[in-house]
Image (cartoon, rainbow, N blue to C red):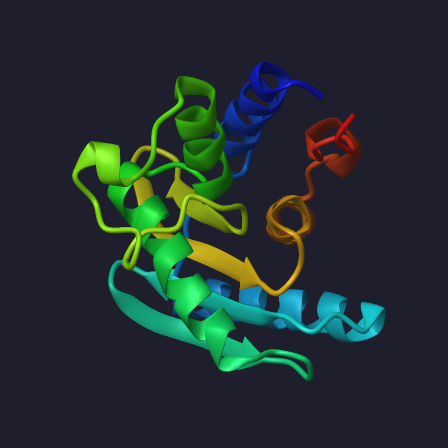
Length: 165
């Protein structure tokens, strides 16, 4: 897929993966689902679900390093700043030949890399973020999308990003 195709698909994901309602119980269920998927697959990832600025779920699975904690924070900051996935933000910056610093942000606090996805509620918008760190960025992104699609009973095959060319 090209950057333009990825950006278009991610826009579809962000529209389709919206909840009617989302509370602390739903946040915990989302985090637990990601933990179960990762454990079944033997993935060493960090998982974070944050509502507004409140951490609700965090798990560090075997293989995670302290660096993943920082990656989670920086990717989540991208979502909470722009209300779109960190991967979409990174692809857009790359397409435009820009960096987060060009937008007046610090790379120490913002990571335009895949893995954090907005938690959207219909009629409200972005209320938080679900973040995965530990895999290549496209895989982090796809895992977050997979969990959201499963929770919302959406067809993952029509939402998942295709493997890169």
